[in-house]
Length: 295
Image (cartoon, rainbow, N blue to C red; front, top):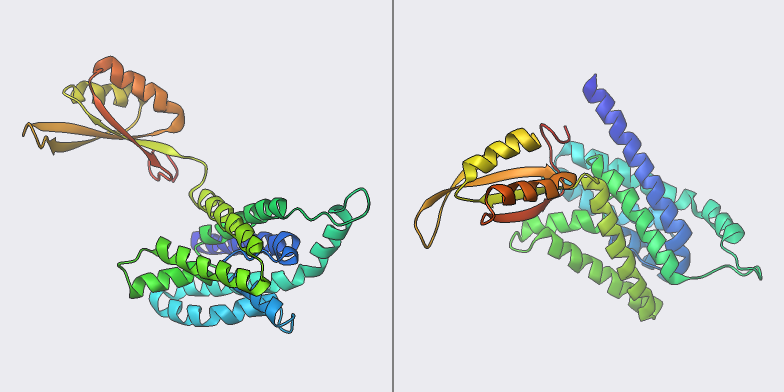
């Protein structure tokens, strides 16, 4: 029963995310020839070159077909089926939302003289925000809308020496360069870069959530005292690691503790109170699962 409920929840997220992304495409990006990278951006450019003979939504599906054939074998059936569903829904909604988005633009995006307002920077920012939120919801549901993200993962499997992030950057750069060549204007490419950066940042935020925490590595001669202070004062778990100084050769206990951002100042004050010479390393923990945090 729980698994069925989770599957329905994932499907709702995929549809909602696809709808938000498709609306962003039609309201902000497609009318202004801003290619957002990936299959969506490539489809936008091809649609322009063939004068709209094939719709942008259908082109997205066509471009993704070979990716999903390969992805089905590599990433498993569940991921592939969810991603195919997400891509089809997104592609259909891109075509379906074209007329409503145009009517909204003509009615609300107008100057006092009745001229449609065309601020490319504004459209790039809001288009990137909505696109990132939409795609983030799809990814959170354990799916993908294909495009450069899936392509980068596949290329990483072929050449693992190059990271997925680098492949993603390369593929998006190729799409942006293609858009600049097709539209014969470098300005469009520059706005595309803004959309890609904003959408990627928002995507990560949606997937990881807003509950950022800090992981602290504490090296101190008074590790035992600090450990008990963290356990009983902060009421946070601590893991003791055994380390060895490279210069001194002495063994030391290293404390690993993860705390919410709100407790960071209290942790630092606590450590300083016990041992002002303690060596503390703080790193971001974007998502923490387990007792005291998210399930």
